[in-house]
Amino acid sequence: MKSFWDKCKEELKKQVSRSHYEIWIEPVSIVSMDDDSIVLSVPNNYYIDRINKDYWDTLKDTVKNISKKDLQIKFIIKSAPPESETPNIIPKKEKRQGLRNTNTGLNLKHTFDNFVVGPCNQFAHAATKAIAEGHATYNPLFIYGGVGLGKTHLIQATGNFIVDKNDNRKILYITSENFVNELITSLQHKEMNKFRERYRKLDVLFVDDIHFIAGKERSQEEFFHTFNTIFESHKQIILSSDKYPREIPKLEERLRSRFECGLIADIQPPEFETRVAILKQKGEEHGVNIPQDVVEFIANKVKSNVRELEGYLSRIIAISNLKGREISLQLAEDSFKNIFKTREKVTSISDIQKGVAEYFNVKVIDLKSKKRERNITLPRQVAMYLSKELTNLSLEEIGKSFGGKDHSTVIHSQKKIERLSKENSEILMAIRQIKSSLEL
Ligand code: ADP
Ligand code: MG
Image 1 (cartoon, rainbow, N blue to C red):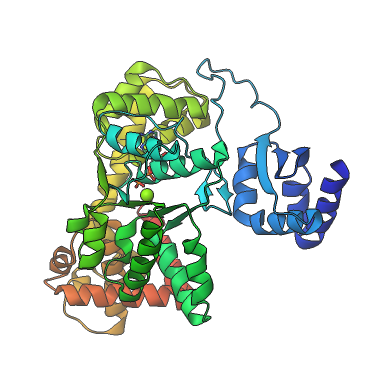
Image 2: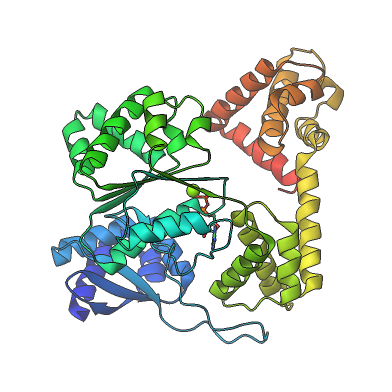
């Protein structure tokens, strides 16, 4: 086993620059190995993120070349994090790392165990659990709910449960965006047979964010056939969407009617008690005990999105670590004040105009004028672009703030600056500097 890993390291050494090899690969050691998988130990979470991001393909290919098998690669953290002075630290709940299983497309960190069930998601949870346990087939199961409410988590948990249970069902998780991309590639390379074959043999197909295919004719057509094939062979299809089928604009009628013919389960924003339970669960995953008053404080501030809830919690934990302060209500209130201060700043279009005018050394009043000299039009376009990016204002509202321009002018500016910022490093630099002057 050790010599196997030594061989892999030799190989990796050739493919990764020396300094990166020494930092990221050298400290990795092998813990166990069997016919299906190898377990590698790394010093901390950063390694997993970094390897996942930059060296995943290289690592996977190397392991495959040397073992001549398609082994799953798993990571564990070598030693417990160092003891901290603060009494808030509790043993980290065992957490699977966010690695992707390349065969199924699943992210391993989403499980039923770390999904908090409440009245808001109970029905969707029960339906997915029944499928996971092999007790039921609903065709399709259609889960809908707003952004950040746990749709992806829940359907990936279903897939992971099936994989962990090792039943022989063949599954695939894909976002509909990737479905579209793969379709385009297959069409380009004239590999449609291969594309279809991949779906035909599945037992369970998960398509996340299915609304994305609406309005894309070829994709809808192909998905219709994929759907029918799986449906007719009595296999399971699970779909997620941010809307009820009937409310998805530009969705083909025949797809809509199929989506509605199975079981439809919604996920609603979590109630207060569920928000509290989620925060506690996430705190445990971080290995931090969050005091009850802090949990309730956050749960009262953020109501409609679990991702945001998590984001605020992580921020408070990060601030506590950075400043060496214990997590307390005071700390939570202070960090919220900062968050809101930045937010207000971001949403102000006049700050953006001031920032842009200062950077390009022009007057704000000129940005709002009809002047068409290039030294004014470019800054004006940058300011419109930033206004679209950094505020929630509509194109009309932005146009109005620039002396009554119409929305097509704003779109034009937005597109132009988007393009220029890719081609021209000065524009990119300007955008970065203006943003940093706005403290973003
Ligand atoms: P969606 O796909 O609906 O936009 P996600 O599944 O990506 O939302 O969820 C956003 C974040 O919130 C994820 O990190 C997820 O783990 C977390 N989350 C959502 N609902 C729950 C829940 N009930 N219990 C635990 N974590 C949750
Ligand atoms: Mg999602």
